Image 1 (cartoon, rainbow, N blue to C red):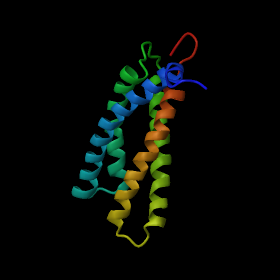
Image 2 (tube, one colour):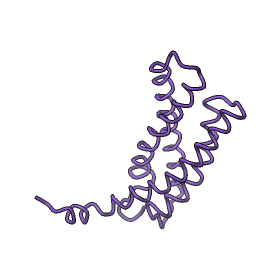
Image 3 (tube, rainbow, N blue to C red):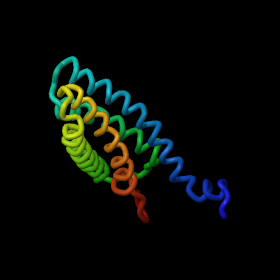
Image 4 (cartoon, rainbow, N blue to C red):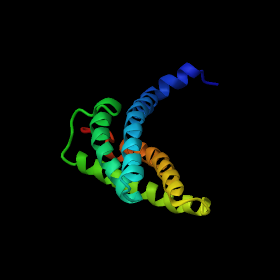
Length: 147
């Protein structure tokens, strides 16, 4: 049976990436939720526009923070921003595309404003998980000879 220290040593890099991604994510999520809530609840933009603008702004912050802090990318290739953008778009469309109909079905008797706000929160949760693995395995992947 392996000790906790041995397990930590073996998975230290991954654990630190998750912690750093989480720290960047907390800041990004709070900022994103405030923007999304203001656009949806105060300015009365629709579900897709308010969440989309929020994720566009958050993505710029996330790209810079995660490339420097989480995944420590030193040699940025020309395709890095494109992979990042593709990852964000796919994660966003899947997460929010799944969240809205799911919450609409579960909370069918609730007012639209409740349904949309719950769907945005669920969409954020799905997005976070997908985005971590997308960034780790697709965007900032480490291969021989380059990042």
